[in-house]
Image (spheres, one colour):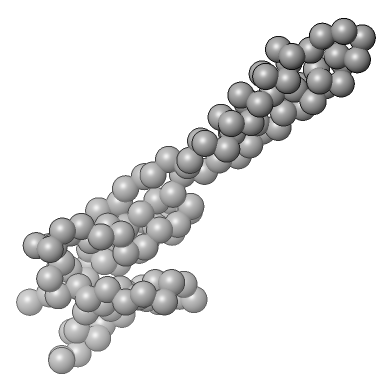
Length: 130
């Protein structure tokens, strides 16, 4: 192993990229067989807010009689809560490593800028190989 292999391209409390490996979240990934690195955007799951919307609509549709205001209030509250939850959902940004063995997700973050820095460091490490 020469000095070029141990060159550090990124080092912080969460991730480390050297000429030979990417370490993140306790996992180490060898860069020796990696041919390319890409950034992928994964949308946040919508199952929770959708179920909450359905429950809110069911509450609103079941409103009958004088005591129906309670069901209506619960249904409206569920719809408002689902709307807020939907707006707060954030995508995940993944750094993926491609090799002959396939593609794997080596790092992911909700912070696009941070994931971009990790991707840039990995690409620099790949370009610096002899």
